[in-house]
Image 1 (cartoon, rainbow, N blue to C red):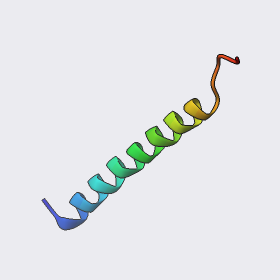
Image 2 (cartoon, one colour):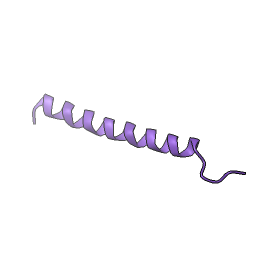
Image 3 (cartoon, rainbow, N blue to C red):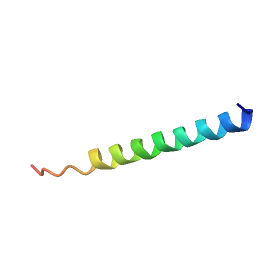
Length: 35
C-alpha cells in the first residue's frame, strides 16, 4: 500500500466519525420529548 492510500483511508474514516458525532450531538441537543 502507498502512504497516500493510507492517508486517504484514514481521512475518510475520520470524516465519517465526525459526521456521526455531529448527528448524535444534534439529536441529543434536540429532545423529542418535551417536559
